[in-house]
Image (cartoon, rainbow, N blue to C red):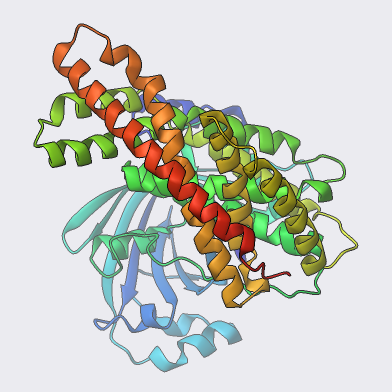
Length: 489
């Protein structure tokens, strides 16, 4: 079973390439590049692809190597799949060269199928072997070149860490260091899947099909179940980070923040199981990243409000919209710092799961009941915008934990509760947004930039009026929450 962590190079500049090749941990400084030329084959109807098989013949230096890869698992940049390699005499397709029984069985239905080239890659590779702290070994492969499919071309710029021996956690820890120091980000896509997407044979969004939530078994250890959920959510956040880095849109940014917020809520919920406080540094790193992105989030929210208001009042939107966009654009996405924390969390939990004598249902329901009491007490005394913001954070944390663990209560009760919590999150958010607008726009509204000042004043007035309505809606939903059934009741 092949296990490799694939890292996409985000910066194509010569300076970034030099920094990567000379990075001491990779041991590539004195390595000369080798030329690689690969041809990927399938039938005209894509029969191998439908069977979840990938077949290529690649020239590696002076030798041709045929490779068959079967369906595996790829998430958070970690690729795990069965693989068979055979040295061959030429680039001509020949499925009969795979004599190993499992590979031969998988290929048996296709031995007479005419094959054609569907993808071609040409790149240079620098390769080294690095010893891990646990005594294992990691194969480092740095690739630069291009792929061609259906007359189209796309660059290849990536670093692969393949586990030769030892623990996968060592590979993830190495990836964390590299993402922290270099312009790298874990990537779920293989060269072949990128090529198929280039050729229009896969969906245009490489992350369009996400994994289904695995079932939860109520009597399993709380430590084990929650460890697996934390790993899965860290993988999802890594996928969203790559998606955002590939296309920096407000929607992708929102999805990334939401995945990190959900992970932070679950980390906080699991804190009593972190007896040695091993995850404290991860919690702090994720909090720093999240808070650093708040300015961009605030200005994107204000932009959305302003576009709605400008349309309703037939006002020119561009001057204020451009000003808001410029403020948000100053914020560094810090993808590398985020990826480093997520990979480190994954590695820590692979080495040792959280420990608990309770089963997951008992632990979850006891702690949700405790959070329920604290939430009720906080809601009874909320008055100021600061109070609303603190309560909104409690509501979000509670909601995200229930969403992550919803499979424990497949009843309508959890759906009703989640719907109410979503409404409370939205209305308390409206109160917070009015306060946030005052923080960001007051200076502009009193400036000498008359057009911008007038529009900023309009937006502040709009949000102030909306705030009153949101407070009333909040109280209505809060009364409903007090009497709503809990799925664990």
